[in-house]
Image (cartoon, rainbow over all chains, first blue to last red; front, side, top):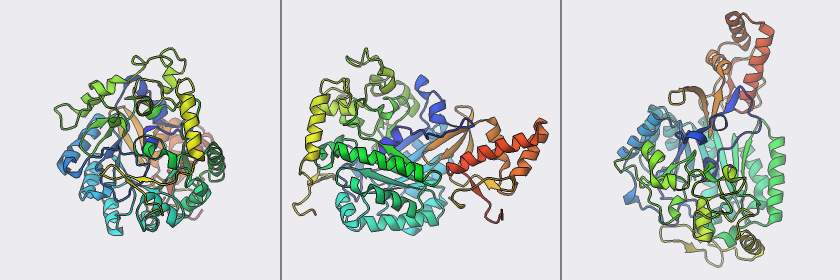
Length: 399
Length: 103
């Protein structure tokens, strides 16, 4: 989910008169304030997806910013030039003040997206959010078939509720994005998920292959697709894009394990993205706290958000190319992919300044690729569910 | 979206931006932008002018008339450009039409 937010997707057919700003404005040159900011307003969530993008160490509710603190953040973001905010989590509707926050965001001129699992929403609440100025709703789906979808989410009845909320979203004339996180155990349902998105009258579908950090890394053996599955997935997406042009926009996030070149994660560290954690930390990426030894500043500090973005040690640590070691340092692609993902480099090599092993030039690439391939062919399907207790292993019979 | 899918923009259309596509002047970057779900588009000057005239009541033909008069340019060329730009926006899902239109 959040990787889509972090890596701006350029529609292939952007015409000159309607250029996509992420592309045409060289924010990367100046580290100008990002156009969109991800607000993870809580880590509380009724779902327990084993690939959750939240850190393994979750912020408890007592640490969350208050309503007034979030309002101050929203005003400040609008003032420094942020145009869009994504209310995310955790499950953002778990916060009782969401309507008030959306209203405030609209009042200060921000475009508001809601990124939700939908299971806590009522029609009345969704109506209140629309009235408060909400511009767009994104609902996550874990599959197409109820038993599998509910099993992945670790939440009975979730899939049915999501379908209902998606319907309400369109009845309220709000644009709908379907977010489908894909992995070995649900990739076979992709064609039906695409059709479901059309049937739900969605405008966008995000086909987001799991990215393996945090919870997903713990669950890698149960989630990693095979190379053949991925190839088929790409073919299905490409064919659907062609078939549904003008009807459904499909954004596609490819997994990087089987690639030869790493992804330009977050568009490069501290270049065009930041998010704010439930406790108010300003982060270069939603997984950044997994890198130990970096000190992230909070909106509760006496520094402004703009100052933190421009000057804080954590944002500057991996900006540009000066921090690089070999093979990145002398690599001709160093300003194209910025050495891949720092969190992945840290998780897999123990040093965030190493080349992301997704890159074929990393000395660890071969080992990790082989390991992933072996896991993909393996029989481990049990999940470690995400929760505040550090995870709970799925029972043998899948409950 | 508020209107039907696959809108075909013609001279008789009365297009308007849907509520989820917002035309706004970005004070920080000093450019006009269209804010849409997970997208920020940067319309050029002409696109901005056209969109400011598209209020769901005015026909595309009338928009072309106004611009042709203002810039003393051939109406047919302007009309073609306006339709192409609006169609592009419609194809991206960021344009709707007044519901009562008949064409």
